Structure formats: C-alpha cells, structure tokens
Image (cartoon, rainbow, N blue to C red; front, top):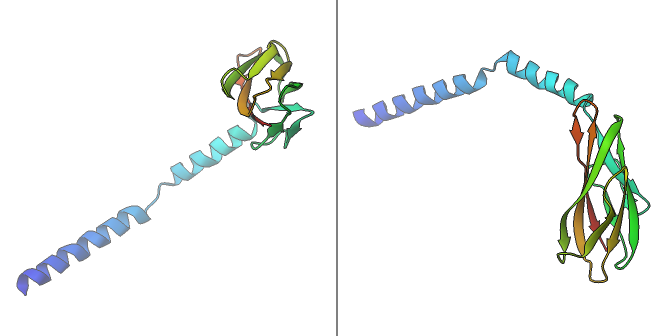
Length: 140
C-alpha cells in the first residue's frame, strides 16, 4: 500500500510538471509567425492560365483537355519576369505530352491520342533572381 501511494505521488508530480511546461509559451514564437505571415503576403505570386484552365490563380487550378489536341498556357505573375521555362513534370502514359514552345510567357502543349493526365511546370525568374514556379494538373 505504501508503494502504491509513492507511485501515485510520483505520477501526480510528473503530470503537474508536464502540464506546467506545456502551458507556458514564449511570446517571441508567436510574433515570429505573425512576421512570416506579413512577409508571405508580399511574396512573389504566380499562376498558369489558359482557355482550358479552371480556377486559375488558385492553388487548386487544373486543366481539362481533349486527347490529340493542342492548347496554350500562359504564365502570370505579380512581378515582371524576364525568363520563363516550361517543363513536363509527368505524363500518363509517359510521353503523351509534348511541349511545342517552352520558352516565353506562353507555352504550347500537344496531347497524344492516348493522353490521360499529367503535370506541367512553368518557372519564371525576375531580374532580382526571384523564382516562382506554378504547376498545373492536366486531365482529359
């Protein structure tokens, strides 16, 4: 019985110590998250648009295309970019997306007759070296 009382006493002290440690917070940590939120509000923003793009300018933008067709995507940003490069990140099946023009604010893309889905990246760079690279999901 004495050991049981000692055991519960140790558990009680440990629980109080843990609650005390986790209940205390450092105000400077809270301020850091506010500062980073202010910085990200002024961040370099970019997106891909085009005739086949839905939800352009959002994080859930996507494009619906027809197999065998060609479409043009446009790179848009809040900063003037002097270089934009287009890259096929993936294609299902492999090789079913072809870049016809991969240099400039507009990228022309052709989809093979067996095209199912894929991702295209447009990477823009401004004169200060800031890089922004939106990715668009494409499906038929």
